[in-house]
Length: 276
Ligand code: ATR
Image 1 (cartoon, rainbow, N blue to C red):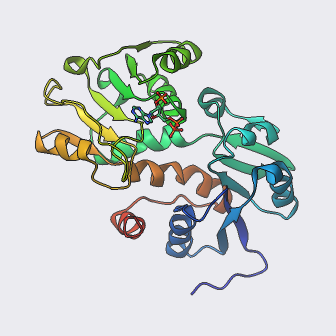
Image 2: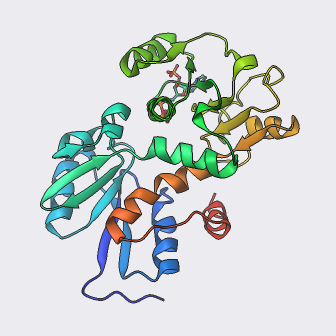
C-alpha cells in the first residue's frame, strides 16, 4: 500500500451520484503503477453545492478534478477560462486549478480519437466520412473532435432530427444530418446513443453496406461487447469498444494534476473491465 506524505497531490471526480464512477479506480491504478505521492477521490456533490465545492477544492490545494453527470454544464460557468475543446463540446469534464485560476477543458473527444487509434491501429480521422448515431453530449464532443482532426464529413443520424440539425448548425463545417446512415461511403460508424446498453433495446442497424475497411465504434461499455460490436466483428470489421474512450479521456487530467504521463495498457483495461 502506498502511504501519502504531506506533499501528496490531490484530485478527484465530482458527480451526483458518483458511486458508479470508474475514475477513482483507474486513476488509483496509475498512481500506484507510477509510484506517485497522490490520491484521487470520489467527491459526491449535490448540484446546489457544485460551484462552492469547486472553489473549496481549489482553496484546499487540490490540483483539479474531473466532472461527471450532472455537472458538466455547470462546470463551464465556474471556470475562469475554458479551452477550445470545452467551448466546442459545450461542456467541461476536466478542471485544472493553476495559479489561483480554474481552467476547464473537455477530453471526451480526444479520448474517443485515442481509443480508435489504439484499438484500430492505422486508422486516421482523415481516412473517410464518419456516421454518428445520436446527437447528445457525447455526439457533440466526438463530432467536434473528428472534424478538428480532419474527418472529411460527419453525418448525424438521430431519433429526434431537430436535435441533430441544431448540433450540426452549432458545430458548422463538413457536418450534415440524414435519416438513413450513408453506410456504403462510411469509414467510421459510431454509436453515441444508449441503445445496446444493458437494460436498453439493442441498436438496429444492418452493417452489410459498410466497406470491409470500415471501423465500428460504440461508446457504450456495459456490456463491453455490445450487440453492435459483435455484429461488426462477425463481419470481419474492426470494432472499438467504449471502455477505451473512458480510459483515454482520463489521461490529460492525470498528467496535468500528477505530472506524469499514464498509459492505457491491458492490465488497466482488465482491472476496470472486471468492475463492469
Ligand atoms: P449523452 O450525453 O451520453 O450523449 P444524451 O444527451 O441524453 O446523452 O443523448 C442520448 C442520445 O441517445 C440522443 O441522441 C438520444 O436521441 P434523442 O435526441 O432523440 O433523444 C439517443 N437515444 C436515447 N434513447 C434512444 C432510443 N430508445 N432510440 C433512439 N435514440 C435514443
